[in-house]
Image (cartoon, rainbow, N blue to C red; front, side):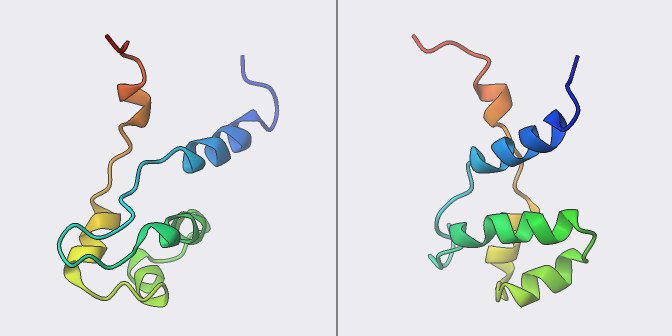
Length: 82
């Protein structure tokens, strides 16, 4: 059973272990440093488009990296290494 406040702690821990690319795969612009700010603002209820504009992610390829990112770290960590 989860303790009070544990879900908030898990959200913070989960955010730190996310695997987001450091650079955009298409154009090479550094985008990894903006991930936590993006999550904070989107979780606060702001519009994703406006958040991406504020973070100066203007190219379609960079926006796609953020909008299309799927967290698979929990799924991948269930399997053993050989």
